[in-house]
Picture 1: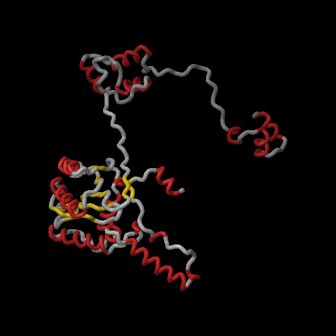
Picture 2: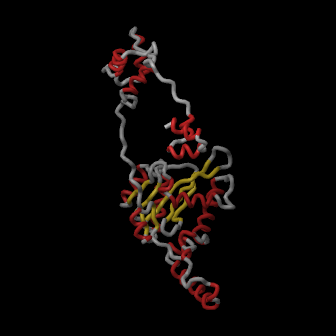
Picture 3: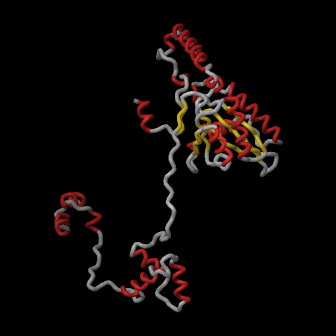
Length: 331
């Protein structure tokens, strides 16, 4: 093929045209061919024979050394006055025989189940967590225990203490359940207090289902994480709290604002209190009447005859909504 290319070029055919006619790449044509090999490959003088490599493999897999790392086998053989090869050679022999892997028996843990929770009304599913509040000096923190109803986004309880302890979490839950009722499910991450025997015993006695996030998966507890971000990114959140009393006063004010004045985008811009106590439907009806009156007075200003979706009453609240449920809702 190269000879035909040369002939075409000699006949004044452009090189690109000649290469196209012959189905060749000009890069391939001009590449310098490799020198012919007229002898066998040179074997390195220090290469071990097949017998020597088999001896190394046998030593590594012997009952005495099978559970040891190659480095330890190498050292023990030297202590016994035996040299079979370098440590690198040991690893090369194991690699050739597909034995470079963890040879010990390791525990295999099944994958964690994805928590899938749904709340169709207030009082069904509570989510809680603990966040740190910076104290007056570096290294000093106060602990804010906060529990939220995932359907209404209503903060059902928030306590601030100087330390984190399971008994304090249990006391908070007793107070909350006494005021707002016992929920069906309590969800939390896998912190020390959340997985403690004290909290587990309390929820078990009350026949409340415990639910936990997967390890290192913050998305499994989105409602608690979101409310902490709302709190800490607010303009009034201080860099540090001067005392435990100051921290408690701030959290008390935040809870009042969040529950009764914050119009939450996730629940149709209603306040959590209105949703939690059943007043949201009345507020939504009043909003709809106001929009209808404006639409009747200025019809040219409205593209549709329906209310904005952002004002819709909240539907079911999910933690990890199953895929098939999402597809059915979309359909």
